[in-house]
Image (tube, rainbow, N blue to C red):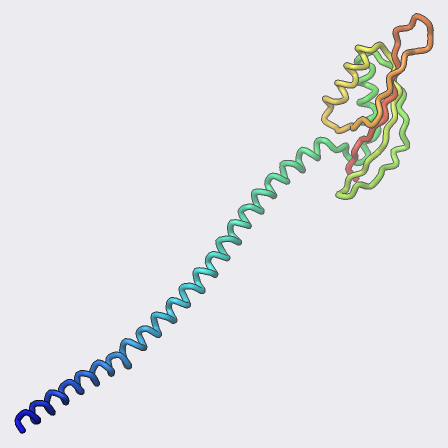
Amino acid sequence: MIFNYYKNKFLIKIGIILLFFIAIIAFIIIPALAEIYRVNQEISAERTKLERKLALGLNIKKIIKDLEEIEETIRYLDDVLIDKNQELAFINNLEVLSSQYGLKIEINSDFTGVDLGANIAQVEIQALVSGNYKQILRFLNGIEKQKNYFNFKIITFSKNKRAGSSEVQVQLIGNAYFKK
């Protein structure tokens, strides 16, 4: 009997302890684990959102850098392209350059431009230049050094048909690019 008494008392104490641990698990540990899981999910979602924002911020920085590079290119294009209604000034520059090297020049163009988009027009210009060979080479080099862009398509050299003449004629056909 005494043995049963102590055995029952022991089993009751173990039962109370087990109930205590089950209560702790059910009311403290499981809600805490659920809260930890929820916080972990929120942190993961926030991390993903911040990574997207960081990537977007980096993209914005890259876009700003690209725009700055494009602005520099646009400034360069502003110098290279001939301003609107400045065809006469361009032709005058070619005539001044030819007279500087002692050459005769005849320029032909109707100045009807081909639209290239982005407010740029391409105009074909033909020129017949007469003089000695070295002067013509200097003239061509002078054209290349001008700030405006004149793209040669055809350069044809021919000797003057008069006997004993050292004069050379050059037919230049090329494109000049104008702002619209």
